[in-house]
Image 1: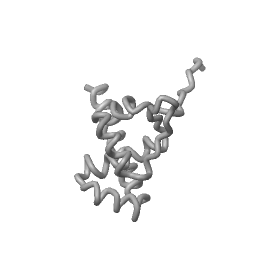
Image 2: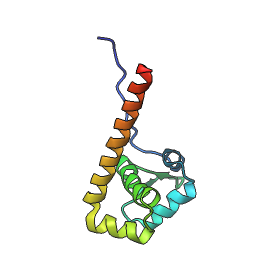
Image 3: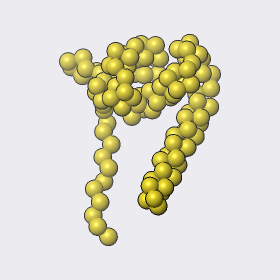
Amino acid sequence: MPYKEPKIEKLFYSIGEVAAMFGVNTSLIRFWEKEFDIIKPKKNKKGNRLFTKEDIDNFHIIFHLVKERGMTLKGAKMKMSENKDDAIHNLEVIQSLHNIRKMLLEIKDDMG
């Protein structure tokens, strides 16, 4: 069996990396950080924000609620505080469906 490089997960992500992941400006990341108390980046000596995998996961939920489902910030905050597990489950289902669609399109392309 050929050697396969292990996938290395970063411990911290810069604000620029986070913004790029979601296709948004860094100013929106800073705004959401202020609005949602579950986002708690660490800061280095220079004051640069360092986001963890948990912060990224929370950004995924916020992005889903605000950008994909069209909720207001107030509505997203309520959803996060009242029923975060439901929001996580819905996001996971949607991500699974996107992955299945991508896989089916790849199969279709291979057949055609």
